[in-house]
Structures are given as C-alpha cells and as structure tokens.
Length: 76
Image (tube, rainbow, N blue to C red):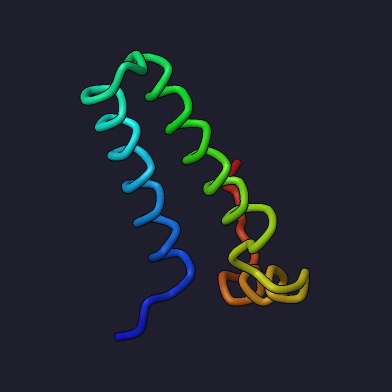
C-alpha cells in the first residue's frame, strides 16, 4: 500500500494543527494566534487538494461518473 497525495494532505493537516497547539502551549505565542495560523495553513492545504490537484483530471472523468450512475427519474 503506497501513500497517495491525499493521504499526505490529511497527515499534513493533522501535523499543522498539532504544531499550532504545541506552539501555543509551550511558547510565548498565545494559543489563539497559534491556532488561527495553524488553521489557516490547514485550510490552504485543503484548498490546494481540492482546487489545484483536484480528484479528477478532466471534465471527461466527470461525465463517466454520470454515465455510470445513469439517468435519474423523479416520481410526480
């Protein structure tokens, strides 16, 4: 089992929040400032994972997903 990009992103989010908590607890930086900075880093990682390296490569990938599900019929 090899590590995938999204596994590394999840680990990096955890590490950034942990580092923020440790910096806030053991340095002169307030816990509020350390937590806000750590959360901003985590949000940046999430944004990169969603919008820069999204889970699909092209629009054709999305159409294959829709074709696999099939049409949806709504009852009146």
